[in-house]
Length: 320
Ligand code: ZN
Image 1 (cartoon, rainbow, N blue to C red):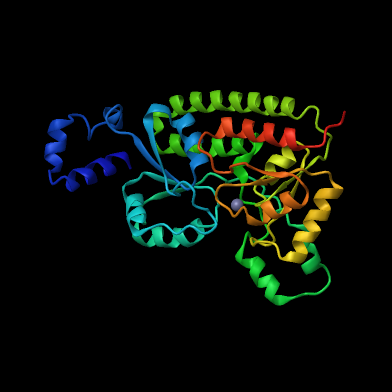
Image 2: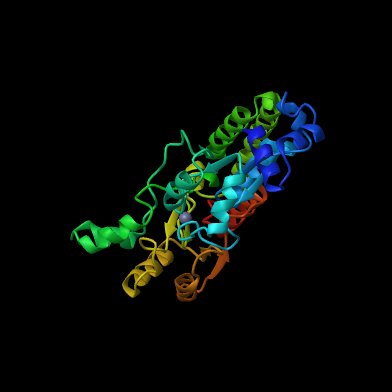
């Protein structure tokens, strides 16, 4: 796979295989000759994956993120130039976000040889946290129009698996397996990085537990887009979504959310940079609170998770 990439790039620069062989003697004899000159080219769907990939791939892997900063993985459509870019990669690591669904058949047609590694493999997905307004709309009357809207969204399962240390460990293992499979000579290097990263994830988990130590168990936090289901599960918290089936809440839903916020003594409504802040601001104003930003897609993944934990801890109900 590696040799293939190199030979192909030589055709791109209009030289010949013989020339490559002359410039890089040993290239055709051993993949190891490429070390230091070439890197394993990995494409990922979202920025946090690059953090994981960099940690495990170290100096031997170059990772490119498909989703541009600020775009939503629920609505993004890659440009033809980005799909072409995938053709020069060794591996595309998917993570189960929405836009991959339309992209994968196109990749299969254009680049049938590209290796696809689903790094969410083996993660048991939990149900997407629904807003209380959803239950109201769906509890008694079976409105088919509403059902269709829902089908359009998350299909009921929560795709945000990268936002907790425990699920990140499984993602890390899949990344390690994929890299080691693509470059068996460097298995040891990838394994060492992987094991070091697992230790770091354990330490991070402890650090977040410490941040939440004064928070009442089952403490609630209100957030526009409910991306924090795995995080909430890991730390015994409950997220209260503002969004209803991927949309802004209607006035009646807003009223209910405001009542919930008052009843639960919620003062902060979290928003993310990729989503609308309008209804969150309406709720915050009504409860005399404020909005605060938490980003589910920050590339500085570890720092971000600590910052999010601190913000949620500050906003939450304290047991003392
Ligand atoms: Zn999402």
